[in-house]
Length: 140
Image (cartoon, rainbow, N blue to C red; front, top):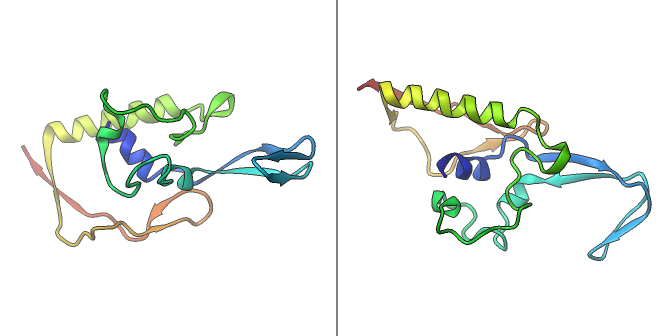
């Protein structure tokens, strides 16, 4: 639940290039000409208050067993459908393995200079913290 909520709040990629329109298309009143590249705004979907109540709040319970179901396209940190990221399972396995190894050996303590809201930068399509996130690791 915590990993999913972190990926919702801070998706690794903020825009996904979906595909080009094959024909002139209108969806929900929005016109898309043939050949237009369609971008999926992951950041905006993950922070949409209609999909996620209090969208900027860290709340892992959103993904808990008792949480109301969300739309399948409301959580897409690795994309969706046949074009979703091939490395998703590997990335999640690597993340969970590294996190478990660190948590088993160390207690993670903030350095004290953290802010309530993380400042982010998006050089192209990948999200990064504006400044380094510093923590101390105390042996258990």
